[in-house]
Length: 178
View (tube, rainbow, N blue to C red):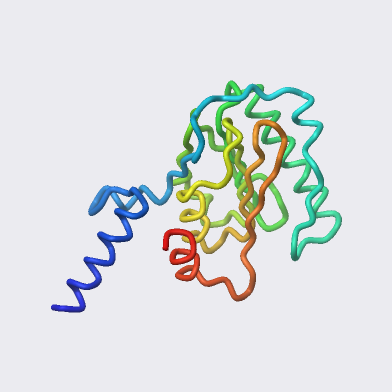
């Protein structure tokens, strides 16, 4: 019984630290990612799309890096044309083929789609130009299929997380949410 109480206490502490609801509501909250910014949508422009830089990415070859850059640009273009510069995500498979496009709002997107279990790459934009939120990091750490997780901010800046062979989900929790 004491181990069960300890586990429940750890769960409550973790949920509280993460700002997550507990119990049954908790089952799906890990699928929603939310921006850490102010929620103000910065309109995407062609200039912002053109300034998306080529990023060195551990474990990827030159062709894959160029493909990833083009995918970041396409996320911004799609968000601009089809979602009012609000948040969207591309879920990409092993060969960077598009598995699914998911549309969100000014501050969050729901990635509870079935394709998340096949998505090696997940690219999403942050309409308010914010960096990774705690929920972003939590989602990435909990989705074993996803090896590369990136934000392309509406101003064209890119941030990327990738899992190394020695990736330790628990270490991420303690480091980020500590």
